[in-house]
Image (cartoon, rainbow, N blue to C red; front, side, top):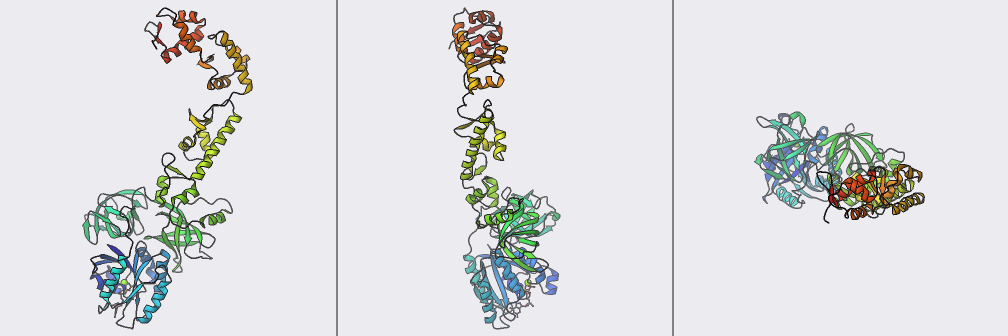
Length: 584
Ligand SMILES: Nc1nc2c(ncn2[C@@H]2O[C@H](COP(=O)(O)OP(=O)(O)OP(=O)(O)O)[C@@H](O)[C@H]2O)c(=O)[nH]1
Ligand SMILES: [Mg+2]
């Protein structure tokens, strides 16, 4: 299926033409039929000679209803532009064309209607010239009469040619169905309709309903009046939502594939033409939504919009700014950034303008990461950019240059810390995280590659740094004394005399100069092995006291030493507290 919107000045014959092509009534309301004027969007469809189905979204031409027109055109890829032969180019011909250009609509066809009333040549010539200067470019024109039926076959053939050229959307793309109509069906509940540009909506799908971010289930799906299990874009879709009241949905709501869209109330945009004096308050029209926006220009072509409510937006989305008071399109726009940085300092706006001058609104993971340094995979995807590199840890992806810089910064921070605190064992991961301004401590661990490593929650050099000279000498005295009496652990006063406090002793243990048996009990690291050899000469099983005598030491040392040997599996403690050696 294809979806085509009409466009053109009031009374130029859009609805008459849709009626003649489809045999369906696009003006749904009694008031519309009474006044002979379209007020809101109308829907009708037919099969073309090729067998292709085309659905029309018929829009109102009256200047008071341009907002409705924009909601209909927003998500539609192609347009049937209508101009009346007897009236020619008129103000809403120009305004509708402005809007189509602003939205970047690139596919279209011109119908010169009411050509039973006047020679179509002049109207066609003017319209084609105006249209050729826009995003639509040069397009085909067909003269028709919705009253006599003349030219309708040519128009059907031309529609077939137009639709055959449209790119095929991706049925697996994330769904964003902008709601253009919501109503209740007795016995079924709330139904929303919209033009699905890509992706697939199926019965039973869980979708996110915005505004509000509620997860809801699609109870039933219809397309062109027929119930179906699933519909893929491009298509008109009617979705019956379970447990949703009519008050929760309206034009401008959207159904989304969950976790695939970023909802944002601040966006940076590029205008499709320079505007010197942007009004500070405008309305953003995007999809079927119309949202008040505060406008902060950065120069004449780039601006930040602060929206009155968040919208599910992606980089590259097209929309337009309209001045509701002046009833005119101010400018079309392309979304450049859906989570822009806050602008705090003075001069930030100029810097932002310069930065955005290099981006073009085509989502590119490499460029997004370059500007952000780090991002989560889901965040990039939700912006519309594919993650260009595998994650560095968890779901974090990093710009390679930024990552290399962070690695250097971490090494510097660890070196600076160990220079300032030579006896401390490395930089705590949390301190490193905050010093580097990282959002997740796992990033610190991922950054700590050789010569760095993470041990006991601290980032350290692979090889521990040497002891400061004074400490090294004091430790050597202890080691020398222990060489003569290996199990005579120095008493607390001796250690204090040598200037060895808990921090110095812990550093000595880390570099492998001493072993700690218990609080304040230190021996040389080879002492336990030596003890095991000496105990092997005792008759088994032996008591603590026998062991103490064999080693020539006190209970203060013998108790923790034997426990250490038990723990290492060198000795075994029996139920009666005596011990024996374990065979190696
Ligand atoms: N003679 C003649 N009259 C036409 C033709 N097309 C439309 N009309 C008449 O023009 C008037 C307006 O036609 P509509 O189809 O309602 O025009 P519209 O463009 O849908 O108008 P809006 O939706 O209000 O913008 C009606 O009285 C139609 O009968 C045509 O091809 N020939
Ligand atoms: Mg109409």
